Length: 82
Image (cartoon, rainbow, N blue to C red):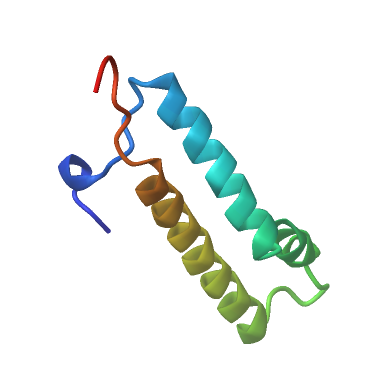
């Protein structure tokens, strides 16, 4: 995890927020995160097994990587004349 001061995403610029959301949505779709979440929401009668827990942890890591990758894609936005 990166210290907040080293992160590129700032909530002050709406253009960055839109670009971040679009990139994140693309990453989540690409890795079929939504389908995997739906699958994990169905809890078997005996509760989660170790396999379910592992799948959840892998999914959590995948989402975090997608968030960081999307954050890095946002980059800097230049305003005014170049």
